[in-house]
Image (cartoon, rainbow, N blue to C red; front, side, top):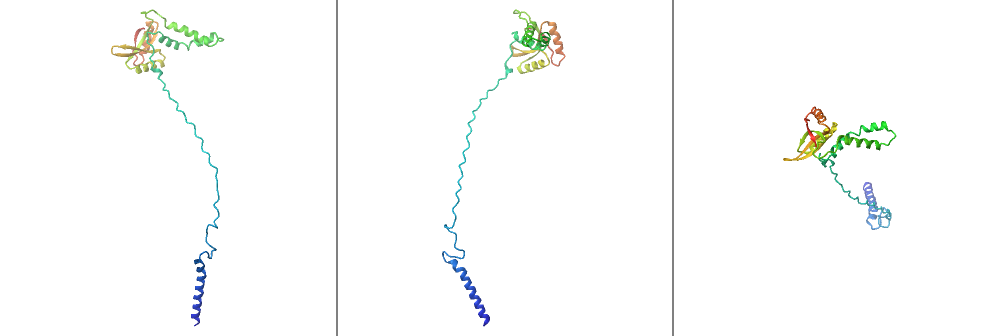
Length: 213
């Protein structure tokens, strides 16, 4: 009888304990945890106010710069040989390196403008002199004749780099326009022939002495 009584007492104690734990939880508004979380006990949301970020200034529109194509200065055809200005430019371009040295030795006190101008004016008439129509003013060595202007210019530039005064003469022939490459002019035919012999030593420059213009 004692064992059965003890078991009943233990069962009764367990039931009472369970009732004490679960009954308050089932009742509305009460519980062991002191009540649930409702709107009254939630702290207010903090008010974070940030200053507005200023908008980045708009960059002014960049105006489009018009691109002007540069023309090829070498496309301008040099004047015909009948105009005496072409050989004058070549001879004047060769003479300036020598006269400034002599001028500095003789008159060092004079400004550089005078010695440069005086030899140029003397050298030009010495090479090319104005002559009447129909007279020969000099002699040239023709080293090539091309139907393509670029080929004639290439040979002319090659001769100039080697120290020869050369130019391109455009001529209208029966079969079309032809570009002659000539070296000179020289004052005498003998000087032109010596020039031809010097050019003949170079490959592909078998020239022909001709009167100029």
